[in-house]
Amino acid sequence: MWFISDTARLTRERAAVAALMSEADWLQDADWLTADARVKLDFTIAIGDQRYVLRMTYPKLFPFTPPEVAPVGQDHRLSTHQYGDETGNLCLQHRPDNWLPTVTGADMIQSAYELLSTELPAAGPARQVPSDHRLTKGQEFRSKSLRPLVPAEMRQLIGEFAEGLAAPAELRLRRHSQCMTASIEKIVLPDREWRPTNFPKSGVVHKGLIARVSAAEFQAIAAADDGVLAAALRDRVAGELALSDYAEKEFVIATDGTRVTAASQLSSQKGDTSVFAALHIDGDGPARLPAGYLALASKKAAIVGCGSTGSKIAVSLTRGGMDSFLLVDDDLFLRDNFVRHDLDWRNVGEHKIDGVARRIRGVNPGADITIRRLKLSGQESAASAASALEQIAGCDLIVDATADPDAFNLLASVCETAKKPMVWLEVFAGGIGGFVGRHIPGLDSKKPQVMRNAYNSWCRSQAVPWIDGAAGAYAAQPGEGPVLVADDADVAVIAAYAARMAIDAMVDGNGFPHSMYVASLRSGWIFEQPFEAYPIDVETAPEAPDPYADLEDKEQGIQFIVQELSLESR
Image 1 (cartoon, helix red, strand yellow):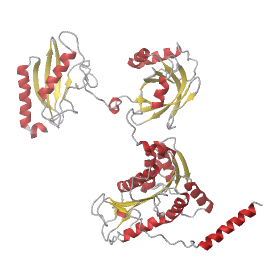
Image 2: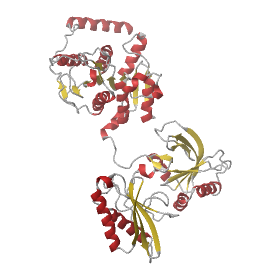
Image 3: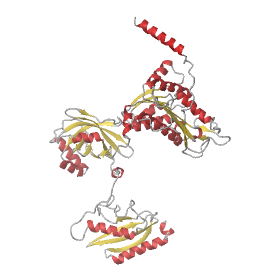
Image 4: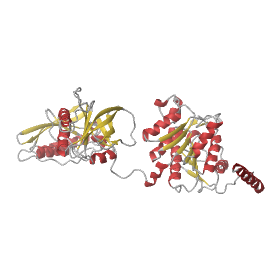
């Protein structure tokens, strides 16, 4: 407790208050006390004939946080700069956002007097004290648990409404742990039906009305309490707008062309009313993604392997703006997968691929997703594997997140023949780091298989024994020591590197001067420090000889094709 550990500061606080009392006739009846392990001061501020009793409570962490000053024994709020009800703290000049340890309790008392004497003067008109508050949306909506979500496209739509227009609408309600949100499902306008783009279909749909009112009417409605708002909207709809014939109305949404408010359960059979505070969900600031990322919306990515790395890469690409995916995986999500995977308890028992698809749509509800529940290099029917490879060839990007050499060979062949960029990765045993690589046709001269061999040769050339990987996936056991296991952070970092490389391949392909990198996350193997990066040069890697490069064989093959085509044309 500060007043025990810093008794000198306590003495100075008491002296500063005593000095202020000797100078200011408006400060009276200062009484020090301790309660609840805190030092408190009850004092009275006299303004004309009025006496205002206040209590200043020093926090346990004083002088690093400011004291609180609140009215005592009041039956109404004293100031517009007061939190909560009549017992709430006054918002003074010295607050947590600008507090300095050199400020004293006497300074807080002086600030309280300046606030009250301005708003409650002994003579003359009251003046409003300017607010220095800059509330975030989170602070503003802390006490508003009913929130209609207003996207930018809806703001534009209601700005075009003519005054007096009213139309049937549907609202989708979603219940959260601490609030309830609502979004417009559709508005039936005289000339068209409007629906928001890219909104989730979760929640319960209710019918209602949306009405354009005047600015004055909206102001009156917004300033009213719940009961008055309900009556005002009900009368507005049933009177001038003549929409009382619309059955099952449960919501009325009022707008003045700029602002929006809503009230629920306004039908004659329901007396209860809930009022919503509109939340604009699209910011007016600069775009949060580079302009070049707009190109991702027209691209399709094949994510082969929806495990720990694949799930993270898929969601990261979605956040970057990609909205079309082919997902290929055969595995189930079990509880053991919690430690590294992007899914959670809601997905236990289902195929990972289905959970990842839901995660993608949780970010982008309008995403186009194709699912193939198969193991690309496993015991599958030849027709299924072939059709999957054809679908992969039709994508704009191939991501190999399988860590399976056989799957890599198949995907590398598709990359080479279909001329599509490919990204692959590996998380090192023990979580000491990882590898990321990419092949962009036309930019990278070496084939993916040659690049992989160059990577393997580079690892062997380090002349440092690799940690034995026999302890299992993402794990290693050096000597007799404990098993080292890659955690979610290790996997997430390497997956993020791969996603970054994949986005670069789709946007311009010039962000990485090398095609392959090894990166460290902790010391071990060749790594002395975390976050080291080692580019791998593949330009000097030898190409494997082509056993079918004989010119005579090629000419004979061409002659056979020409002959068959000639026979077909007859």
